[in-house]
Length: 126
Image 1 (cartoon, one colour):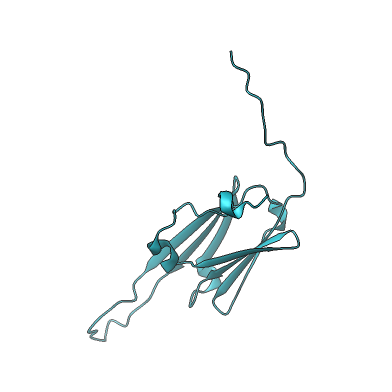
Image 2 (cartoon, rainbow, N blue to C red):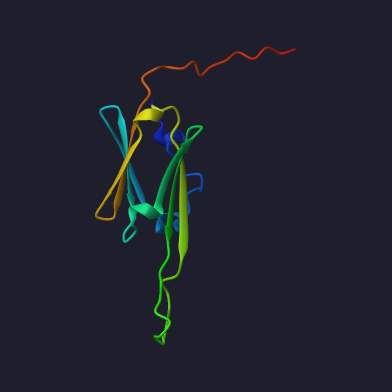
């Protein structure tokens, strides 16, 4: 079953143009492992948080730019920003989630859960 078209790894933010202007993410599957490659240029790993809870993976980034108070700036565009993106990843092996950050790319690996859960349930009408 192809989950990508059915909401698996669907961003909770919807699909609009603004969404792709930050934390742009490529997702692919290979040999039972999902890979997320997230652009985080110029962000130190200490300012990145990856959390998993109830089937949702949340990536948070905080960037704070400091300025020298002695300089007179003509224009300041680099301000503090916080970015967050959440994906529904479903049933994965929680203890196998790994993340690394190299050259501005955050790579997250998620092993698929091989155990099949019953997803269909008959509801009794009272």
